[in-house]
Image 1 (cartoon, rainbow, N blue to C red):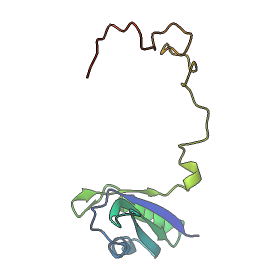
Image 2: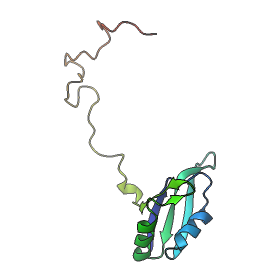
Image 3: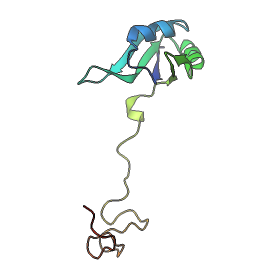
Image 4: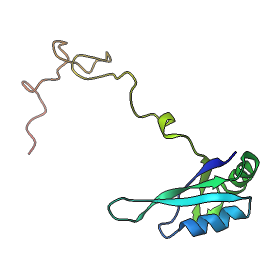
Length: 123
């Protein structure tokens, strides 16, 4: 089964063909892509390579993680599916009156208001 690999810390000029050539030395590559900015078309400095199987993918990760490519040490690891990357959904703390911690929400007497500040005005 094919395995997707994340490749980070790329210089802006690296192309999908460059990634393909680099990773083919370590096994069969089924796909290589450099992620670009939607508005500018410029590389975002990372990409993905899909290797033919798990063993070849692991061989490439072991060989290329930390490897210097065009003056930069690459970050190479197994790509994680989007839904596992975090960043949403879980319980949140803070906000008005929530959270604990002494930052003082409404009615807590914690000094979070505007009046009576001894800091002076800053413009």
